[in-house]
Length: 335
Image (cartoon, rainbow, N blue to C red):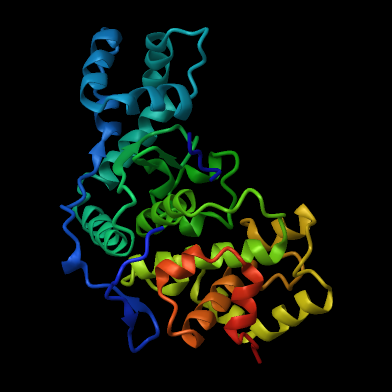
């Protein structure tokens, strides 16, 4: 089972746009439009006086996703009756209030469905033999926010109620530096990014080291950008304009620091985490820096690699497992 925290080559129509972004002609895809399954709505319409009957109806409609939701997302343990826990969950006053806010914010999702549709069609042009997931929305009570399972991609809507949402300050684990990205516009980019990490996994046989991590996530960012060309680079990265510009202005200094301190091939988990994991800033750099600058630099390396290797297409890029090969062929030398 795939759990979120976290190739076949074809002749295709990707080419470089004027701004350097890859462009994919979705007219070549035979996929239909994406339709979001509103599991959250069906679940919160359960009659709490007849929970078992309602659950049977939901299982008939949503199949195995119902069990995925009950036993993984909200975590009902085997020793408890599903109906008992569901009743308590649905009657939880704070959850009910936040769910109502979700339904107000996401009463209409046509724009989100269109974004998923175009992203999946682009992906289908590139990788026609990889299955496209069915997209669900759920309410987890601030549990797992993106869930990927076999042919399923589900998003917890309470994480996208807006950076100024009144209740975020009361939720453990939602720190102030995270709230700017808890907004509607980030739902699809987040979902696509994490879904891609389950289709293009970090090689388990490879030793964990910083270079492999930043190149791996750089490739995921490059493909995410290709699938969502309408989303700005700062938004894809989850950076403000100032954070993005800080990275651009300090790219050479960040890279030189990594090289000078021999961090690029470090296998220390703490070093990797400081460059990869969400944080208010990157620990090795000034407080003006954003977190996850390792991913940002990995993305720049991959863009440089693709710019300087016109004979390599996106499918081939995603198939390259040798991170050092990508770095050496990238010509990446920020100044």
